[in-house]
Length: 94
Length: 94
Image (cartoon, rainbow over all chains, first blue to last red; front, top):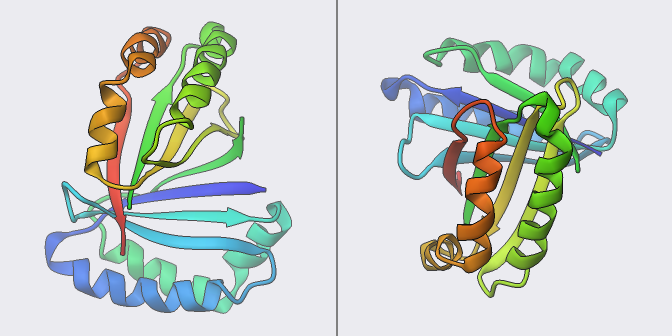
């Protein structure tokens, strides 16, 4: 299993739009065969910090995900709503 | 529920020691009443990046945790093994 944590800082005026796009991405992604979980979190002290925490069966599932039409279409839109690049880490359990 | 993501960058020579201390912290923390989950992850591309992902029932459980003897004793030791401050975010599900 690979866990991905993708942390973004969203421009204040774009938070609602970001969540709207993210919702569609979540719904489509959860249908993907190798997706174990795919959740979106908001920092309780700073609503601009919005982070995906994802669990994938393996790297192959991730490779399919990043080439899926919903990913290719929505993720660039999410990026445009952010202040900075997404901080992405791929993890394994210790 | 509150999810905490605590991301640390550990000095290369301290990774094994960090994991050893963390293991004790994990074992003790999992016994705490309000702890839903408490996991440690290592970045698959950079073993110096080690991150706790924690799920807590509520803020009260977190307050108890940060005052627990195992936290007070071990977390400063972990911090001494790191290159920089831990990046800590408290999250709620969107």
